Image 1 (spheres, rainbow, N blue to C red):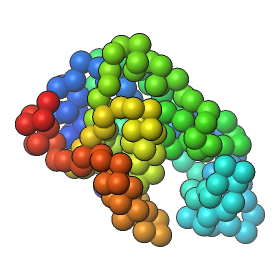
Image 2 (image 1 turned 60 degrees about the vertical axis):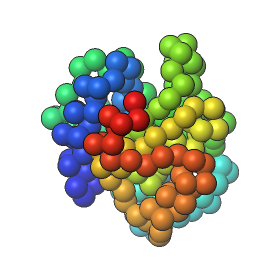
Image 3 (image 1 turned 45 degrees about the vertical axis):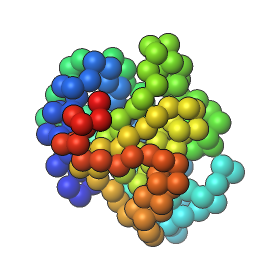
Image 4 (image 1 turned 135 degrees about the vertical axis):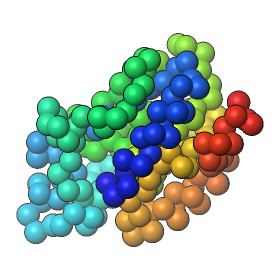
Length: 186
């Protein structure tokens, strides 16, 4: 993702401020249905209809066991307590850290957080207008207070997805702040 590596130092600094850190990782099987290459005649960023709703088609990415599926080499969050791998089912995509894109199949993260008494989430990462957005929406739906750290995110902006993200987050009461503001609200 263009400029995606710019978030790594910010995320590393943020991670030092939290005892409980969860990382997410796209972990797609080869030929995943969200890949444009799995749909002859389609191109990346086309949208198709799936039983669970519209599906943006992506370039092949984060294929299980390949270097492209690994975390950035400079990511330094050794105390992360959980890695949630998403997009494992070849027939459904998974943007959210809490649910598959059908928005009914859980990843298990909600139970993990509740078991630890965590009720407030601070989100960072890639991509703001897909994985971060869906995670924020699902977390609010599950009753968590959510804040997005904007300068620790980057978006893709497919067909106005960034504007739609900001509109959705505002409607849900999700605060979008800079990393420097974090100290004033914790």
